[in-house]
Image (cartoon, rainbow, N blue to C red; front, side, top):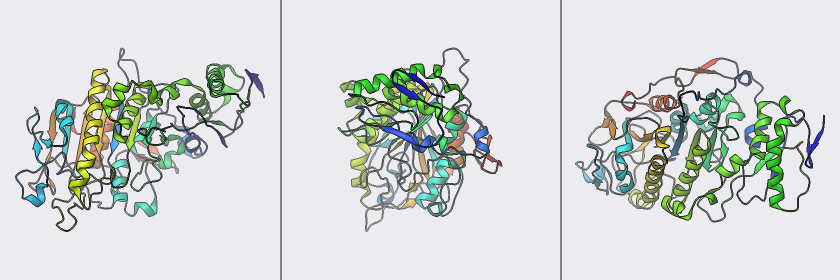
Length: 460
């Protein structure tokens, strides 16, 4: 069946191939990785359940995760030990906040200004000291040895959210990664695994702080052909017309969900506008900071404001944003913490000012902490899964508090020991997802979202 409308030839499509439409000043989304390889197993029988919107005008909730790949030093950021010996306490001094017991690194003055909204969990630990193995555990809830060789075996939190909740608004993806392609870097176990590629994140493209930033390319199914257009404006108008008319085009209702999503995202203006940082004022962009952390956080705010449910901010630039500080930890953190501090604090403040913080959980953590003692030779800290900290703010949790503590040298939990499963269960609860829920794997076996862990009760 073929229908013609406004010069666009539309035919029923199969699952193969996507035409990448380039040349948009504000770019778009690459859908090939998400939609062209739909899984044919039992998981296809399950579709995302939208968050119920029947409670007055209350917005559905969303999550922004700063994934601090490499493992940040808890002792030099959120769990300082000023009374310890010099090789333990490190080079930085703590600054007090108006919240009792919530002292922070002197380089986190922005955090201190929003301390009443922060919950710092200091007593998370696990047993995997390898980046890949630890990252798999923290992001999926499942421990895995030799993860780099085995590959990701369980879906990450963003894919679970995509599967069970879907986007908060139609015409938007449920799960987005900023700015890196999460498949290319060590420790980024952020795929859907057995849930199928439909629930993988959409990559937002390159570093949004660069002057030549372009959001990723929109894609249409290859069988939806576009005529040659004279200029970009004609192309955009054509896409907008397709978006408005798609539901009336013969055969559109017969397309499966993935194909419809491809057309809606490519043809609709909502997604393009959400990714268009040029729509923000110069004052706002300066407020967040003209760096990868700041512009990534601003883009994340735009996405959740528009209707994306889960956004992961991945920042990996060797010797700058990679938190694996085996050497020169002081110099690295003096360079890294100020832009990170500005991005996190500004995002929390901006969400609060816009009335969005109660509906948006901001989280920041990596795969593990760093060793209690600074190495005399390299002046760095090694991997340390025995203790790590996590920052949480917004999303309806109780801020202005510290949960748990570690030993005087920061080596292990002293009270309220928690694990990766507790952290994931907490995030799921914010979104109204029962952490005890199970999803079928490729053999249709029910697999628990979180095999061990409970929501952190102090936060609710």
